[in-house]
Image 1: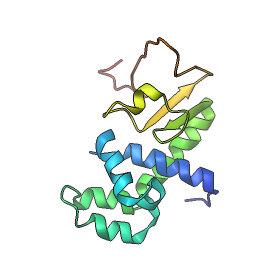
Image 2: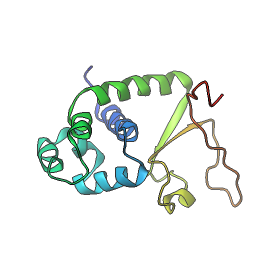
Image 3: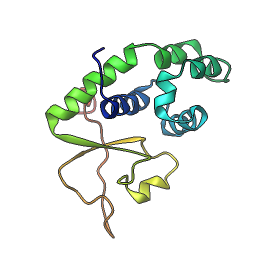
Image 4: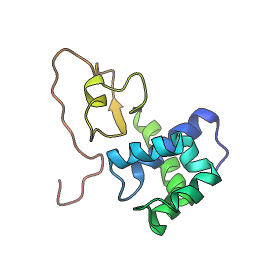
Length: 137
């Protein structure tokens, strides 16, 4: 993994959180709250030891959190985001849509293309994946 600046590292941690297999938005938020922040989840060695004792956090998930593979995938994803000209909004960001902040299962990370106003008086949302499977095309 290459050396990262603070802001880049923060985005990689946020992307990695969203990429954790078997963790949905609710549990992702719970992990962040439990660890004291998304950066601590991936950098604080004490967190890994503490998470090992949490019911529901099995060895596979713990390996994803404490290992390097998830962070490497997140780093590649950040490169892809930049190449596509996208911006991201994390659920704790001020620019995250206010209506979604109140939804229990709202995504922890949004990818946005363009300069859309995400908090208009009225709106319609189209939700989908960035990389659909053959079945989903």
